[in-house]
Image (cartoon, rainbow, N blue to C red; front, side, top):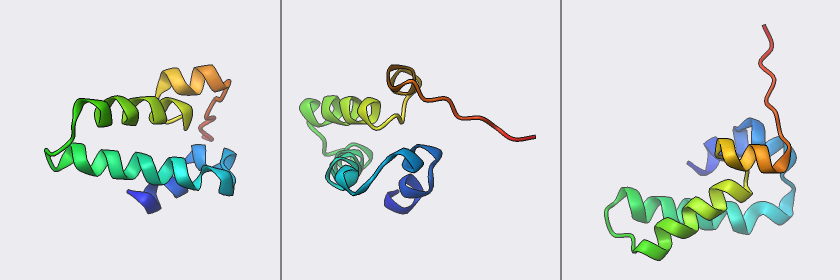
Length: 70
């Protein structure tokens, strides 16, 4: 997941200051996918996903548009 996130189109907008947020997102996601997450972890993952531009709402709030070349 870490490598995939850093290869995503959104990663083009991230600098090294995003490393802790991406790491926290990965940790929370892992806990969720393994079935051991608490409600606050799920909420934090959702919040971080928006801040990182990983959701449509997050991208909209950041003013990001991913253009697909044809």
